Image (cartoon, rainbow, N blue to C red; front, side, top):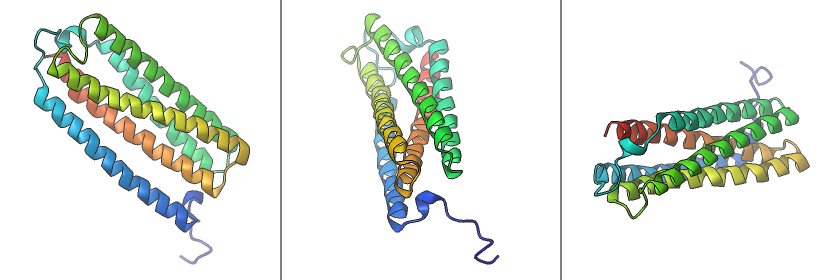
Length: 201
């Protein structure tokens, strides 16, 4: 295949700085992976140590958890479509899909905050037991990351509106996409390892 027939690199990879920034973000995600691995390990060690607090099987509701999972999985899909539209130079479609991703992220956070408030009202708090401390720190850390992601996405939408799709903004969109998919993967582990197991505890 000659050079003319070769597919051009995506816009975010067309500069050395863009390539290095994306590589650097992958390294950052590996550090984030280590953080969540530590939180999961702590949760596993403290699993079942509920003291006098309610058990997770009493409080975990499958309906709310499934809704949150659906919202986050769907937001990962819409974020992927946004990247696809970006690579076709479609600014309006890119922004529209990012806004939809943002709304789904806000909806997820709304359900999670409501869930935490329900748990607190029923006697499950950070101080209730070792188990609930581990749960709130693990799930809460993920929630904080989602919150930071939504704020980051808002700032990126403002830049896209002002500057359009450039090598710089495309790199930032691609990186927020990596971050968002990472949070989605972490949530799948929380859903299966925390909620599903907790419902039968």
